Image (tube, rainbow, N blue to C red):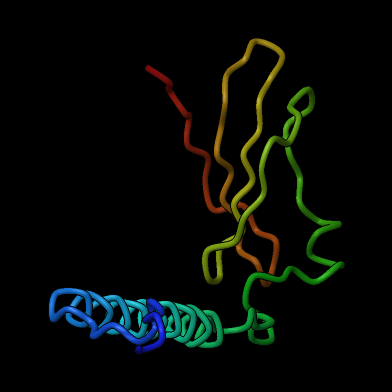
Length: 119
């Protein structure tokens, strides 16, 4: 008489073998996809340029020039900026009228005023 057969002794049907192969391939492809996405993120984050300091004289106003700037009385400064050799100062008066004052950044000389109209 022969010994009883275990489940491990039975031959594997071809459909189960194919399913096992497909699951294995899918697992490998998924792992490779995750590795590719992580690698792409790391590469992109390392390629971001570090912020640099502006070149000497660009966007800066010497202290003696800043002391010589003259704005009309009663106006408050709401923004300051620099565009090359021009210093821009946005002001607002008590009535809410906004103005953009332009000054030479090297000498502090007034270059002009532009009224800002909002719609």
